[in-house]
Length: 364
Image 1 (cartoon, rainbow, N blue to C red):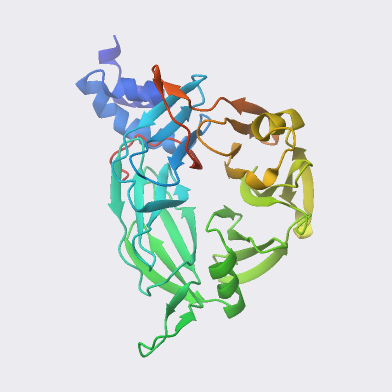
Image 2 (cartoon, rainbow, N blue to C red):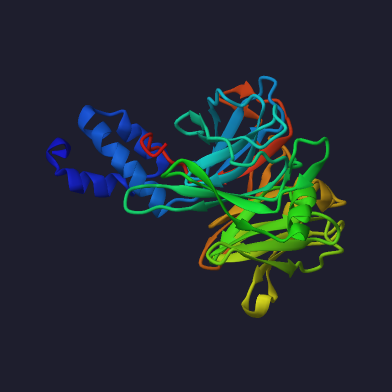
């Protein structure tokens, strides 16, 4: 019976499957394999399932990448990434990871799909830059999953090839459809300096604006309106008291997750008039479980996408996670990855990412 179903009906059914079920469908027969690819494209755009937490090693040296499947509880899997040498993750978009190469001074980027093990360098920028801020924005239409990457600030060699370097007060954009970089405008020099020196690169896109956190005490936020090429600065709640502060998207709005030593970790959303509203706190018992009785939030890392926020330290200590839609959700716990199929996994520092798995090879 299944083999006689129309293509459109199979496509509709398969596009609602979870990633692990869709992977099984892909390997079942030739007919289902042909339907699974467009179904994977539809599934990547719909985001019907919770994001996966992906743990990448801070240093290579033979360490593997691990991902937690949120649908099958306590299920960690090992991802066979073959390109983790001399690269560092700096952004995620459309189920892909944007890496920068660490064996060169100037910024060079690559994109990677960890679930299909595809990897491809991006073309070089028009202007060579060291340590600029990088942000990614989804740019999809119909069944075409695309994105744009914005690079702001950074250091460049002075005109004339002298020994001195200068801050690069321009913004470049990469379009995944044209596969080209374009300089799209200037930026204030003071913003270029602060993004170059104090930005950890993680960005959030919300309502037409790309935001970066600057990590100098006190914390502040730099915003770049993509349509108008205008820049602005926002304050951060409790900016001079927080031991960590990270930008995340939440309910289509910009949010800040931050915590102070011995106190609470909180979540604020940006509302009308650029006013921050407290919308949640991390349960103290989860903070103690991750950090111990002293609850030193300064050692915590945080990552978030729509529908999920994770606080973590390393691959084995566990993860505090918030999952929710439309303001409704709750905090929970993911056990650390200590073993896979009976094989021990030694603990190591990680860079955590949240991804909606994209199983479509053709979108790469």
